[in-house]
Length: 298
Image (cartoon, rainbow, N blue to C red):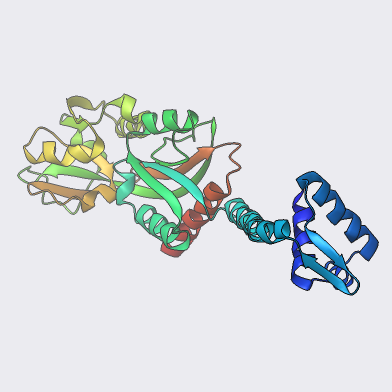
């Protein structure tokens, strides 16, 4: 039983005339009669009584009519849902982000814009460090991730650079240098650094270490913070100093002072990464929203 047979049946049932029904659906009357006859043979019962000037439904036809309408309605609904899914209006989106990325205005702005534009998408958020996010993206457990790469983008993924933030020095507020408006990075020579584990974000970690070496000193790696957003709390208790993305300066922890780096300091890149061959319309719509947020916030 094909859907067109059911549509032909409905046309005749509503017109109660084969000629008018054929005209309505755009085929000849004899082919329509043959299609209805094929349907009746498949069902095993007559659906119409042929009359001299029209047709009327048999008992079997009367019972079949509401079911046929339901089948066509369900088919139309399925078609509409499929089209919406193809446009990326239905489905799911799993977004990952690093702790420091969440403080960039691009991230909340783009997620908020996407949710408003596509309210029926099942959207979930997950915070993790860069290495873990890329692992989960590669395993297809996440669909798009905001990360802090180093100088190079992760080669296995498609990347969109969203921002390059100047980095800042973070000092205990009681530190002798805490009153300066800006400091060269070399002023931190001999100070113990509070940093996150390199495995959590090798790109950003290496960029900080490379900037210190370029300033003429090897950083003393002291207390390890479980993640970058924990650094401020450890500096507040005077366990060391650090260099952090400027977005982190929004974390106003008592006892911590943020100071601009004089001269050419390191920058922290914010990147959106997706799978290189990603074809999901949902993901493509999200990328478009992120890039739009980037333009609006520049």
